[in-house]
Amino acid sequence: MKKTLLLLLASLGATAALLVPTLGSGATQTVRVKEVDGAISLSARPKAGTVRFVVRNAGGDEHNFMLRGGGKRWGTRLLAGGGSATIVAKLRKGVRYSWWCAVSDHASEGMRGSFRAR
Image: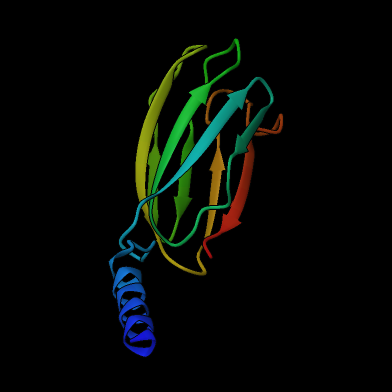
């Protein structure tokens, strides 16, 4: 009786493990982008696959967010202070992507960076 109960519980546990959703290649990663005057920060290093960049201008000046890599380019509209926008990009593993604010000389003032999709 005990063996039967243990086998039943083990079987149910294995079945339940198959039902738990996993983060696979089809999942969308969300990266929050915070822009302030003179800096841009990303909440996480983006992974390969579909990435949703949620951009928020927390500064006083107008900013935008541009992203380029793998022969593609994405960007937001000009965002006033407090404004936000979202862009969705399909990133390829191992490709280096650059991001920056294209307003005036903001990129040269530190509003730029890059990452390699992992």
